[in-house]
Amino acid sequence: MASFSILDDSDDFSLGSGGAKLGALFASSSQQGGNESLTYTRPEQPRPKQAADAKAPAALNVVHAVAVSVLKYVNGAYENKGKLGCAILGSAASREYKILLYMANKQPVAEAAITSSFRYIPAENNYAQFYDNSQQAWSMLFDSDAHAVAFAKQIALARFNASGASEYIKQDLSVGTGNAIASGDSVGVKYASWLIQDGKIAAEFDSDKSFKFELGRGQFFRGWDDGVTGMKKGSSRMLCLPTSVSAGVGKSPPSYPLAFEVEVKKIKAGKGEEAPEPVAAPAPAASRERAESLSAEESQKQKLIERMSKMGHSMIPSNDSADNHSNNNNNMNNMNNNNQQQQFQNQNQQFQNQQGNQFMNPQQQQQQF
Image (cartoon, rainbow, N blue to C red; front, side, top):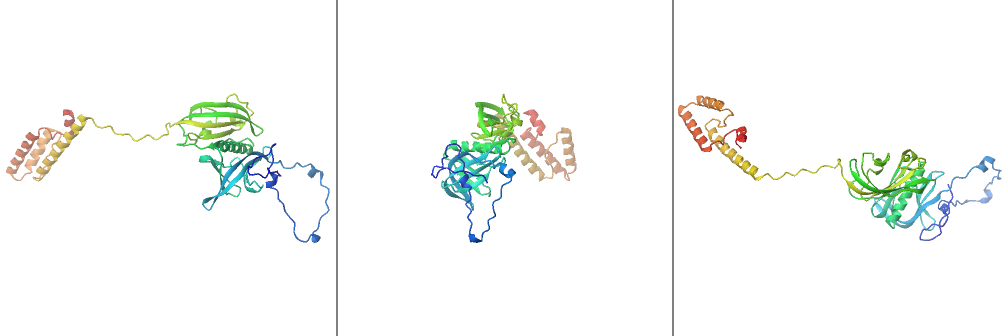
């Protein structure tokens, strides 16, 4: 494994000058045991020329380091591990990157390889989580929002470099609030962009630009909509674009990858938002009076039907007066007693004279009103 040197034994976890290396954290001090007189030592042979000329593995330099408060997730609860150093080590030449948690006395605590698919998850209140190489969950608390965002930016670059600068990397820097951006939403953002050169942020391309767009319409570069989908108001994200995506973005040089830092300022829900339930408007006074009148008519009609049903006959008139007359004749022919027939007709006529047009059919009622 590559060899590194550690920062001084101090509680502030600060780095020395000149890009110090953290090799002592990986140095092994194996000791031999047993009777040395029984140990056979083979005479040293000259090394082959090819082996002598072979290049040593590229050293992993300190890309970024900061002191953090660390929590370890064990058996469903977090254990406070106190203040530790957290460094990102890497080499653009070898495409090898990792996170290292270490103590001030040069003792390593945890290590996690950073690949293009590495999951580094910022959370609220300057927390962030990741899993180490043994799938142990760790949570880190940064001293400030600036420290948390700066560390997440370096994670984004490490993921991009680990891919050989060939994959489109999206890395959250901070979380927001509310609903996530969805297709059809109108969004307002601020962004800045830089060229990426030799695995590092180089010349600034755009600074503090405001941009409004509708997600899903492809109003910016190819991959923009995919890059900001899922962000929330107040959140920020870093996008690292390989040359296959960055070519043609504004006036950027076609041979350089780009890095975008995007912050969402405003979201206006679009077509994808579920419409609220409609609220029924109160009925006008005239409509209420008419409804009450019709309700009273129906009540009187029901009373009449119940009264006449006791005599074995229906009192609901038909739409056609001739049909009504025929039905009445049929009803009367079915009566067994002429006196009952006459009584029925008299009562029917009496109720019609009293109630007027209350027994008209619905179509006739609509014509009158």
